[in-house]
Amino acid sequence: MKWKIEKVKASEVEVVKIVLNGMLEPAELPTLIEEVVRGVVSTTAVVVISGRLPVWAFTHIAIAIAATGRTVAIADPKLAGAVTAQGAVVPLPPEAF
Image (cartoon, rainbow, N blue to C red; front, side):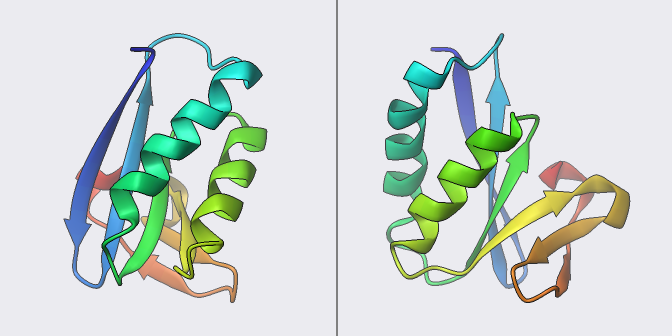
């Protein structure tokens, strides 16, 4: 598999950390999205997307998670947290990045 999905529970959020093994090709994106969404379907927490991904991948994954009714945030190591669409910063532990 070209990626590994790790889950990190951090207070009121669930972090989905995507670790790529090589480059992500656009044709692989639907499979990655399916795996990520399947993994967060049971949570009611804010879902944070973390990892070194292309911007286009973050965007598509965030849209797919939001379509399930979950609040989505994007991890930003420089802020030591995740930023929601509303502009709130949720603190995250170091293992979330």
